[in-house]
Image 1 (cartoon, rainbow, N blue to C red):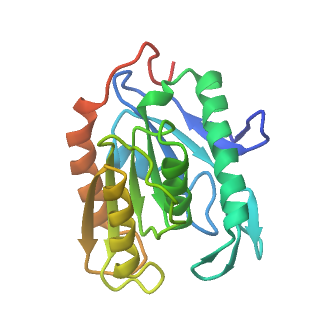
Image 2: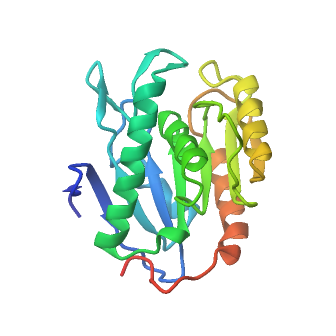
Length: 222
């Protein structure tokens, strides 16, 4: 397995799935991470699923991110919109290249990765079947709620998180509810770091959603 570059020159990893009935996971790392960071947790959440993991193309003091920010919690909205479109095109190109069904793609994003996953879902409701958003914040507030048609979304947040405080998680939950997503908010008694409790909750949630994901004509990872 080695890092690949898509037609958009996005460094990424793709790991074919061992279970052709499983959806594909789009893994989106946090600030300072890379395309390898979340690969170990993919099988913990969805055993047998194919994994697609891009590296963020923005550098902040040498640390990869998926979009620019002016300061902690102050996002460059113009860049966020541009990078979200770029990610949507990457997903479409990757689906064609690797042969997975784009209608069976779930995002798993941590921190900055969760924020761009939210942006992708809100701007392109067709791009994802659902999402697990770990320590996410409100990326932007849509002028009008998109139609997410009961798509499942799991928010995993920490009660003592100084970066993505509880009010941000609750606001994000409200935005997804207004968009008619089937959203759940799970609290961990911790801060911004990923915990074993997060992974256990994500695995339980995903096992409940998996049978509901419609099977398309294209097999995952083929």
